[in-house]
Amino acid sequence: MLDQTEGYTTEDGRKIGGVVMEMKNITLRFGGVVAIKDISFDIREGEIRAIIGPNGAGKSSMLNVISGFYNPQEGEVWYRGRKRPPMKPYQVAQQGIARTFQNIALFEGMSVLDNVMTGRLTHMDSNIFRQAIWKGRAEREEVENREKAERVIDFLEIQHIRKTPVSRLPYGLKKRVELARALVGEPSLLLLDEPMAGMNVEEKEDMSRFILDVNDEFGTTIALIEHDMGVVMDLSDRVVVMDYGKKIGDGTPDEVRSNQDVIDAYLGVSHD
Image 1 (cartoon, rainbow, N blue to C red):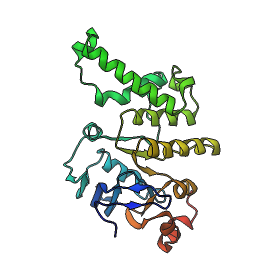
Image 2 (cartoon, rainbow, N blue to C red; image 1 turned 90 degrees about the vertical axis):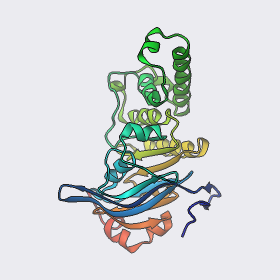
Image 3 (cartoon, rainbow, N blue to C red; image 1 turned 30 degrees about the vertical axis):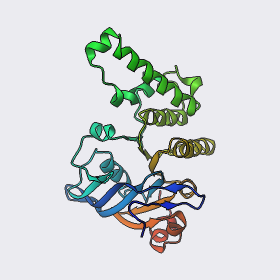
Image 4 (cartoon, rainbow, N blue to C red; image 1 turned 180 degrees about the vertical axis):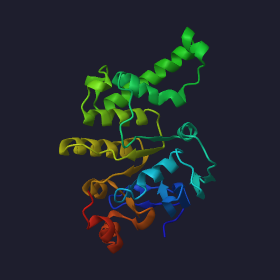
């Protein structure tokens, strides 16, 4: 069993820290439907943690619990050693947790730069009056946030579209813009809901590279949902597997790959 505080070392020599997020016996119901049933797992400092399973397994519901969109009827969410009370999504964001969505949630009429800038809202302290005058503190804050946005835009190699309205972008670039918006908030925990969905092979390779770079260069802890098993096995340090709201596997990619319950429920069965 992994130590709660000391973490572990990956096969490629990366140091993974102690527990950042812990889900304890989470149960989530919608009326008579049980979306998540008594699931426990943790996310550790610096790791890439994948959540996989067939359609309808409860993966996005779990991500919504982590990000504050849903509050479970049973169980506890612990973040950085403290039990987290029920929170709104913006309160969770203020704790340093950012996310992308399965269905792209961008402002289509705004430019790439303006969309990315909205990711800095949790770092803006100036009130409406100061922003209207745009002097002193408000001006300094705007300049700082603009610099942060430009650095992320450069990092994700989308400089050439920074002034382009999002509505004119192809799907793959929209996904990258959404990643930029999440990343510019400087999260310590980044949640990615199917970041490769709908992408071609080249776009998946680019996104995989950026996810690894975010984890390596920024030290960002990442939890992701993804259906592409090749991507999951290549990127992830550990994988938790869900099926019909239950946890059926949890371990390294190799351990999960050889788990017969996982093979029967997911890897060895075609799910349309």
